[in-house]
Image 1 (cartoon, rainbow, N blue to C red):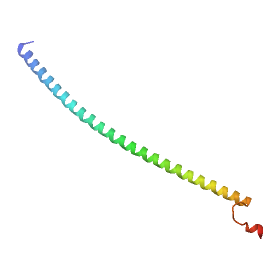
Image 2: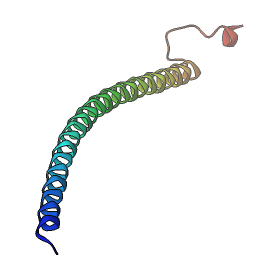
Image 3: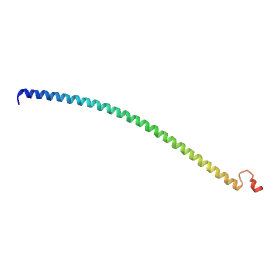
Image 4: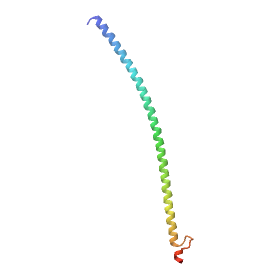
Length: 98
């Protein structure tokens, strides 16, 4: 191989290596930006999920409270009816006196 072509090949190799290094640096910057954006999106999703979980917990608490209230009312109604049947509710049983 002649000296001139070797020098040209070395020059081309240097240019190619410089281009590859520049592309690598660009890709590194792009990767950093993407990582930052992904991290930001993950944080946003985490806060959204936390809010949704909190809302779900509140809803479950409300539903449980309503269930307790409904069951309590049902229990009180049953107790009232039992007292009425037994004549111990303090009211006069009109049908019995007739």
